[in-house]
Image 1 (cartoon, rainbow, N blue to C red):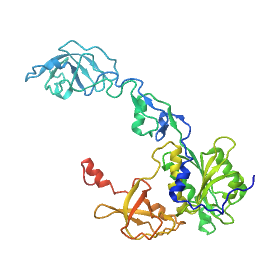
Image 2: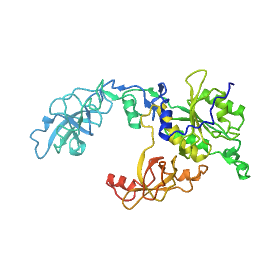
Image 3: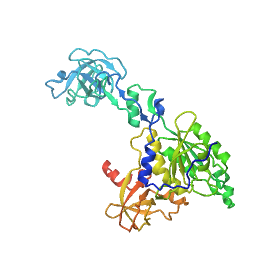
Image 4: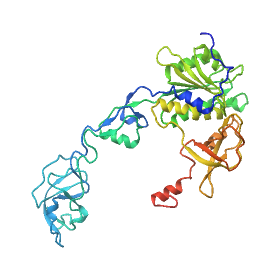
Length: 446
């Protein structure tokens, strides 16, 4: 290994926005790959899709009933019109020529309407051939020139169906299937290696050491791996906790460099004598972009690139080991990065406006990101309340949080102060349900 070059004692103290800018400037979508249609959901489409054929390929029935000419209903008498039934057409049958004027055919929804016919009378408006089999009486002419879906109404050959760069949703899966696209050219999901470090960490399988007071639970790995999965655009590679030994750390980092598009380490990022991650990275040739951000929790954040023998350098995020710090910095910096690698255009958490439900601490030089719950006040506005104690080593508040409030550097944030809140999901349960049910026209419990 070469000489250590990680300037760990020279903190940059970047602003949050500047740190995010420097991280994202090196984030570029991964090279395209093909995925089976059944596995394309949530990927970004890497090539535009054009309709190869017109759909539907012919006029087809929009109702079960009887196909005929609208002219057969001219001068519609009060007793209706009786017509001979000379055939039947089912969905999937080939297109055929229509019968003579004054004749009808039974037809099923989606079946091709024979040439020359322009009307499908719904079966409810007929006697269903009850009076005389092989003859139908039309009892109502409201379907004159109706219930025929035009060929090419959905798409015409050569139409642009989906542009490159859109995220593949269930509705777009239907479009791809209709266009016969399988496999699908996509931007692949990045593989994100999660490497927690520290002699003191124990996974749930070794929880007896936690009970006996000689270790602490390893929650960062499971939480960040789950955050990758929840992003809908990343494949987590969760490494077991790695001891604070240079050879073990080097082995794990080199393995991640072989298997992953991104490496996220937790712990060993500060200035303690056992904080070896930065030392080992430096010995492997790591090129650091920055270390430390003016924020709390999560200030000992680092980012840079590790050269590899083949392929582009490996982006490496060094997250703090404290659970709240690791969680917050992942959401603010790592998640947007991996979404950009996956080709996503929307890479940031949604933001809502709220007011502080009580006073929030502030810092004169650092932006704070307290975990908050959201409630609705009497006016329908959102109120942000802290989840409880905000220490960076606390885990419980992560499970209660609806979002991260943004408290800018400056004076204390008094109750009632407007706040921006970064939502950690679609929002707190129950906030939108009343409006949702009203929109559906079914107010009340569902």
